[in-house]
Length: 485
Image 1 (cartoon, helix red, strand yellow):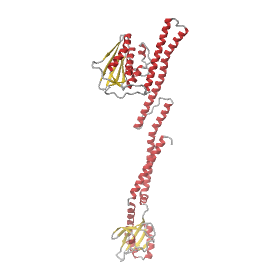
Image 2 (spheres, one colour; image 1 turned 90 degrees about the horizontal axis):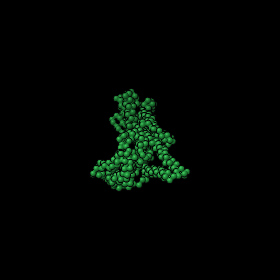
Image 3 (tube, one colour; image 1 turned 45 degrees about the vertical axis):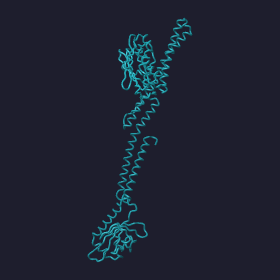
Image 4 (cartoon, one colour; image 1 turned 180 degrees about the vertical axis):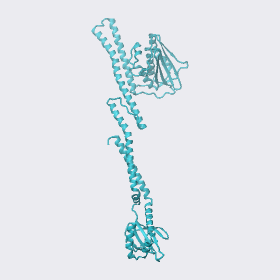
């Protein structure tokens, strides 16, 4: 009984049996408190006395016979009526009894009478020396040709457990049949229900084991009850995310290896040239040393970016939470990027409304890095003579900072992936003057979300690209979030 299906089936079956037992006990208690069995016995005895009274000849014979000759006649009636037969004289004394134990006793004196009329009496009597009660019905036997009156009494043992007698005589067999039928149908229904519940879970377990073994294409069918479908849908989303995560890890290793290999190859090659004396000329040595320095700097920037992303993923990035004036923040970023823009022949300007922008809440250094990365990315992909415009606006809940360039733009099919780590738009990368590792926009996205905001991208090929950062206002900013993948 290790499978979930078996356990559910056994549990449901036990519940069904308990319910049937409770119903049986309730019926027993209900019927045990009702006098229905005794009433049925009294009705049966009354019917037998009426049957005897409807035969005048037999009635006259019973009245006329002396006690010694009554035994044979009463015994025949006992066999016919299947009941204990007694004959009682007018004084209530038992003249004859097929049970023999009450002969000579005053029946009316010793009995507990339940009902008595002029010609009918009903009650209970217990013969001396016994523990068994007898239910009896007596009726006066009269005849116009006889002066003495006798009572004809028909008796039957009172049931020890009246409810069992009633059930056994009338209801036990139907109840047992109905109970068995209900049990079979209930167990069948329980089997179907437990199977419908257990099967999707067992499928999910099998698919989870397959994913653990490296097969990430597992999907569950969206069938069954609502909660089962929700479980299957959640599992499919999880499987898709696991597959994407594994693919991202493989891409990460591939991209890091590629991006580290290029500068390492340059450093190794040019340093070997110095060692071999190929770059013996002082001018050549300076040029080679400059290349080595640039490649080492590129490697360090990439390693710093990777460490920053790793700290974000682990939720270990320290972050201050203080009010910041976005205008001063953007002016600082513009001042840092202005020399590079002038050198590249690109116009970099800041366009804000005279009223300024409402304050935001966050870490100033990290926000400077966020907007500096976006401006640097815009300058890198804009030709000489182009323009990078930084604008800002706000509404009741957030401040929106936009960095727009006049670069070559990003194809629509590649736009959703620009925030992926190491992803680079090939056309834009080919036209840019410097190569990057493809981590800048990923860092921007993480920093924006860590501040409770978001970043979006819009682009038109041949026109330019626009990145918009949405940050909560200081008067409505939520608690800063350190994202963890």
